[in-house]
Image (cartoon, rainbow, N blue to C red):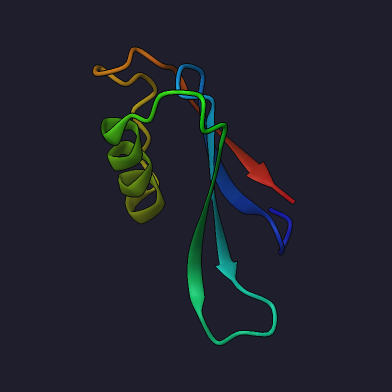
Length: 77
């Protein structure tokens, strides 16, 4: 894996992208989570919970039972 690669998850229904950076440049803060979404699209708390679990455990459930969206994982460089 590329040393600057970060895990990212997208939801097909929520149109949201979650990215976890292991560090912030110029800051002592670590493990920051960034969320990118179109505010016109629905927000699903269950997707948020599934992504938080993924960032903690590395295990991703690939379908949200609440919104029906497909969750996909990739790496951001």
